[in-house]
Image (cartoon, rainbow, N blue to C red):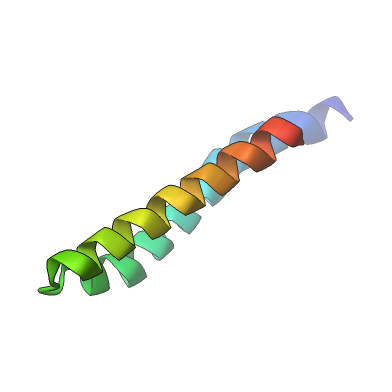
Length: 61
């Protein structure tokens, strides 16, 4: 059990980093396109809603 936990602690950061990288590479070009102020505001609100959901899940888990 101890070796499995140690392996998980080593693998988890790489998995999370890979997920963040893939998500960023696919989404970022869309966000960097020329968009109007309303579109930028909606994107920011969507980002903040996602962060709020992650915080709520982490808090109530």
